[in-house]
Length: 83
Image (cartoon, rainbow, N blue to C red):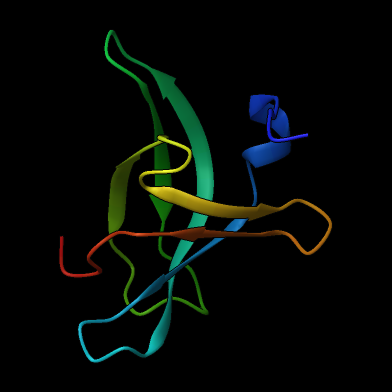
C-alpha cells in the first residue's frame, strides 16, 4: 500500500510546512531521477506554489516523504521551503 510507481508520483502537488508552521505548496513533481543513493523528485514551482523554483527533493518515505495521497493528487514532505 505504501509503494508507488514513478508514474503515480509524477504530477502530484508537493506540500510542506514553513518555519512559521504555515502550510506551503512547493510545486508539482515533474519527474523522478534515479541516483545511486536514493531516488530524487524534481519538483517544479507552479501557479499555486510559493515560488517558481525547481527543487530536487530526495524520495525517502518515512523521512522526507511523510504522506502520499494519490487520489487527492498530493504529497506531504518534511523539507525546508527555503532549501
